[in-house]
Length: 129
Image 1 (cartoon, rainbow, N blue to C red):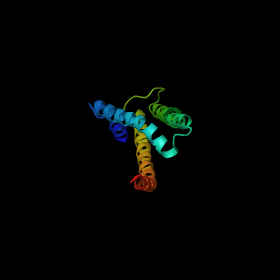
Image 2: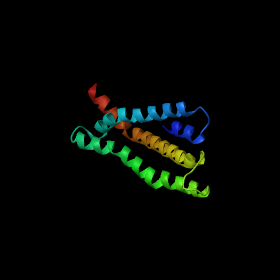
Image 3: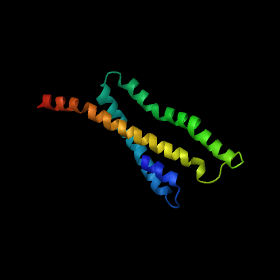
Image 4: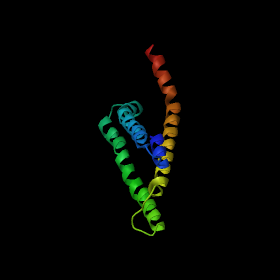
């Protein structure tokens, strides 16, 4: 998903299809991984509640990022242009770079989580032999 946001930030002609592909693939992949990751990390007891807490993170993040980051940056860029509406790539460039950075941070944290839980899977595999 970070690649999609970076492509959108660059705003090069004809790259919207690549941006949509990478962003949609990343977004769709996370919804495929959420149920498995939730059950593997927390077990199946109270799975419904835990999965819904994980699932609500995406819309909550969308509201937080749009309200406290994208909107103010857009308004700031519009005021620099002396208008209430912004024109050009500068309107969302910073937002897309920030979103790409957030996606990269999330990926790094996922790698850390994977490394920290690796021993649990090794123990489970050994016990099943």
